Amino acid sequence: MLRSVLTGVFVVIAASAQAQQAADAVEPEAASAGSFQSISPDVTAALAAKAAGQSVVADTWMISAANPYAVKAGADVLAAGGTAADALVAVQVMLGLVEPQSSGLGGGAFLVWYDGATGALTTFDGRETAPLAATPKLFQDESGEPLKFFDAVVGGRSVGTPGTPALLAEIHARHGTQDWAALLAPAIELAEKGFPVSPRLAQLVAADAERLASSDTTAAYFLPEGTPVGVGQTLVNEPYAQTLRMLGAQGVDGFYTGALAREIVATVQGANNAGVLSEVDLAIYTVKERPAVCASYRAHEVCGMGPPSSGAIAVGQTLGMLEGYDLSAGPDDVTVRRLIGDASRLAFADRGRYVADSDYVPVPVKGMLEPAYLAQRAELLAGDDALPEVSAGAPAFDHALNWADDEAIELPSTSHISIVDATGNVASMTTTIENGFGSRLMVGGFLLNNELTDFSFRSHREGVPVANRVEPGKRPRSSMSPTVVMKDGAPVIVAGSPGGSRIIGYTAQAIIGMIDWGLDPQQAAALPHAVNRFGTYDLEAGTDAEALQEGLADVGYETNLRPLTSGLHLIRIGDQLSGGADPRREGIVLGD
Image 1 (cartoon, rainbow, N blue to C red):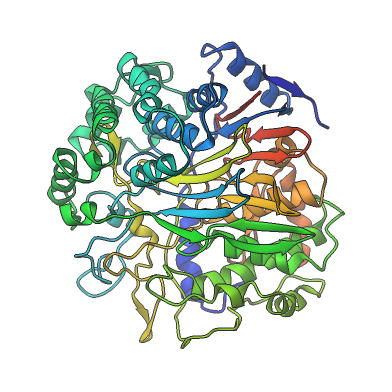
Image 2 (cartoon, helix red, strand yellow):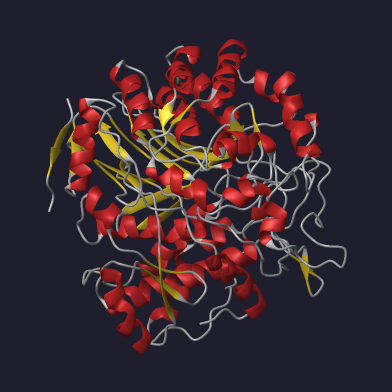
């Protein structure tokens, strides 16, 4: 039974900063609460709780994710005794149907997993890989200059080898208890019956209609008879149902080899702006289990995904630099925002210099999170004004260190899933096809990613290599920050968000909100955003964050009012479970 309770500048390398700030020219995914009351009574109750600003509480299990159809599919699995791994499968394949612009079978994901039986915490890397035929010049023109972003995105050039199907299969094989094919059945049924287009999906399709029209298959689905699908219109996806049936019968091998793999490759290589993905790239794809990366913060261990994600490092560095400062004045205090903003800027400077796929370049993860190094960096925050300049530090490093600053644009899209099951397993998974609608290429009823544009478009700067440059088989750097916060060896917070490189700020603020400001998960998810990555302080338009504008300007920041559409999904674990879903999007929390 669902129960709810009411609870209360400038970067030193200017050219690199300009390239990063170019992402600001593209609006984030639209905010929308949606209308899903007809799904079931528990969904109706969850929607009402979110609208009232209430956290949902439960005793046994809980799920928070980005769309009510997907949350309901996962909740039904958990209610039937399935594990968090089983629920992840049901949720992700449903998200790929009803929220296709954000994640799906054609993308990749990072998963932080806590095993309730053994107490082990680990991570799984289902990030896309660059094709073996890719070169560092993939996103450069004939003169060696970087392509414009959407010139690189739309078409086959940007498509990496998808990792999400393999990750779902891997976690289900290790920790699932329910029949694989049965977990796909709800999405198959809805794909065949059709689902009503949500306000958010309709808005995004209309805004991107020109690019969606670049592919006949994509246009036929999202722009039938040349008109964008509208709110409430029933959308049927028989090809997706067929793909899921094939996966149910053949397992994940049916995705990476055989007819579907050939169709994916033909679509990528035959598209305008053709890519170099091959059947070999699909056939050799593997999920990688990696140690969780953890950082200490106020008697907690904040744990997440290490390279190729920058998420755990940057969140950990931001919090680590703030450890010695009092943030109790809260989110409306200019000094608190100055401290958080400049700590974030320092973390982003290190991120841009050092973080990439650690299978290809050495990354000083230990040095970047070493308490003495963070204390040294934190001394830079001791003044009263914004730091006039920020540059990468010099963390302890056991390899040669000579990297140039990155030049990559990571745009807001993506989705996040937080789950706690009845046996104490915890899953925090952030999943994406990168930019909204990915490459705009559709195969088998799902969109293919444009993940390769998360690499730096420049391979070198003044002769110095960029760590996050394109290389064959390499995984592009990400900001996805699926997080499990531990205390005394047990998980206490499950967190994560979509939002491009602002994911790091969204996730860090939510953790600060719950640990420093005593907020419950719904309050933390609803906090107005103020994010600083590269010097300019982005303030969430139409919220209380606007009141910070004058004070932040007085201490030396340029400010920018803009939409900041996070998609936080938070669970606090204690005597009871308590969960929140970001009010800016369509997600909900269900629990029992």
